[in-house]
Length: 291
Image (cartoon, rainbow, N blue to C red):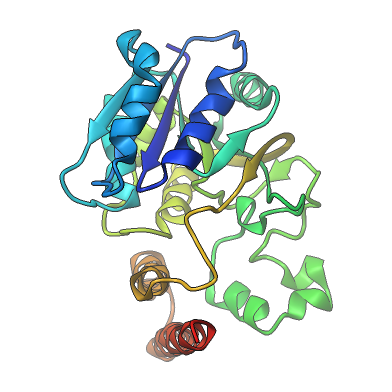
């Protein structure tokens, strides 16, 4: 088995169907499996998906796992990764469309370099613009401060570490981390680095995994010759309070895990205040947008 594709579904029948169809409607030169994990959807989406793709299920090209509760993004993906049989494992969001020969190109690039621990393609939004989270630097205190102060607008090379602005969006090159919407990894790298950290409910787990992959000596590649489209269909202008909390809590979990011991108390205190002040501002902004 060459490739295992992990997709998590949560109340998104139409989007998840679109994602799966973008894979299966192409002729591939390699053997693959799709592992679909449902996080206790309440809209009958998993039942409809099982009916829609019953032929794939009978052929065991599509394997379905149904959770009784919403375990979060990290735990759900880990269920799929533990069951995966592929040489390579791809984390793929349920609100994406795989374009043209994206998978073939990415696998060919991975095959050429045994020191690659993760590869991410170019992720574009429906309007054609880059989803900047597909190539990033680690959120160090300095990089995060430059980003919040928008200093990257003055000098993107000097101050643009947060969005890896040393690379143009169509330039192949190494980065610190990728986004979990499309993250291709050799199983051997995961065996060394571990799976997603389940302390992250949603958000941050992809950055954390990239951090550990790099700690184990692997390179992480941004490969924009291949593309997917990211619809971000699960979100809306008004976000749920829990989603906002999960995002900011993930920032603090990551800092505590990887940076707390590297900085003095004053820096850590400022980071803590900064994260949770931003959280309160986002809650206020979200509340206003709902009126």
